[in-house]
Length: 594
Image 1 (tube, rainbow, N blue to C red):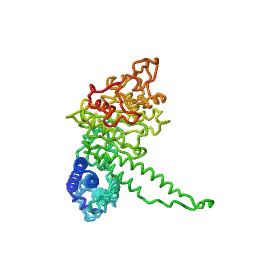
Image 2 (cartoon, rainbow, N blue to C red):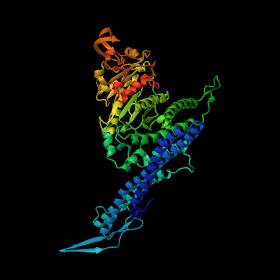
Image 3 (tube, rainbow, N blue to C red):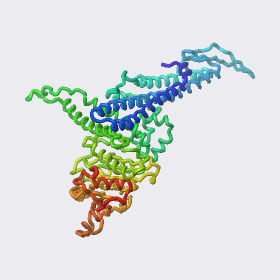
Image 4 (tube, rainbow, N blue to C red):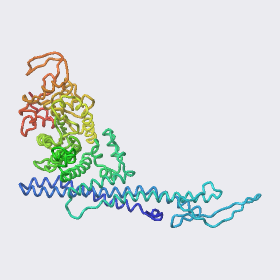
């Protein structure tokens, strides 16, 4: 417990100066991690092959983990020291004011916190006022009973003593909170940051969240606000405050649309690294006893224990979550391969079917941006690497068509996709629930890019993803210049001209062997309009009919497709992929149409 002398004399600037030093180490470690991830991996891909490349890649990945850990832990120390100094300022000010009042009144504050003061008694005589001074009387903090006393000094002394006691008790509580958190911020000796180390770092973050809640509270981070409001909050912070919120509440900061992609990536990588470590740690835990005696005493003599069944269930969930982690990590490790740019993790959540948003190249500074919305059965455990690869292939092709310009392609899996063809994919609710999230993300992109004219933006909806895109456009302003519907079951509207981007900027691809457009009509995911249906210009039906983007009556640009089935539109070197890339790069005159 600190004494009042220690509280009076403590130089809070020493804490903040030390915090600055730890902050510089944290920032340097983060910059070094980025250089490892985006530079060293690229060099390995360029110069090494086979087992040599694998070994070098493993070493570089370990180095990246080490820097990630340094960034996190040093950032936590910085926040703890700044928080301690900030919170101690109030009780220190309270104490100093009490000491100043005591000095002005000629009272004495003793080393043990007691207060002595001169007593006064007054004998009133006609026209006179005589004061007699008695011996000093000790008054321990909070123990006096002088309020309302005829001796005014006793009441004043009691008030001063109480304020001194309150300040010391408040400082003691603050010191205890931060001391406990700081004691845990230490690393094991050695150069290897293991999964156990990262799990410990996550625990350290939670502990400091509890300790520093009064200094930096998650409630101060905007939740449920617009991207512009998020950006205004972020821009109103000092750089140190930004670093502290990103370190202390990485999941909250990483989820904020409207913040710079580099900021979201740093925060989400922290969450991603610690989550992956926790998943692997939990998978390695030993199984409980599989069998126990049959409680009923009947045959069979032993049965599977409830604990083992629960363990099996958890193991299956963890294995699925690990698949998503490995798919995302594979993209990180591919940076530099075939010229692939750095990756940005703009969203990540392992819970349920999972969520992830991954960009190739920095969308904040891109001349051309493409956002891909996947469809039915998308989840982090179901070949999510395939959804990531579709946008890496699109990036490769679009970048060729935009020499001298920057292209960014994004896999946006930020909604709960249908997980079955029937009944899930036949329902509109998934689109209704997902489209506001898509609108928010697209608004956020536009915000960080600096306005609608700063980047040419294309949104690509595949399968049910195009239904989500259609509903987003139907709801209001969709921050995009072009819409590409691929294998679409319907966009909940009957004509391309009804979409925000205008008829001339709506594009469609559908292979003849792709049954999803027809199935979408059965599910009612298209839209109705009056008109004449044609096939290759030949009328075959008229009236109030349901259309999907691949129908001629819908009015979209129907692009040539040379792939088959529902999932091969991104096959390398295919006409299907090249036509999408031409739209992404704004090379409309080069698109081959039906």
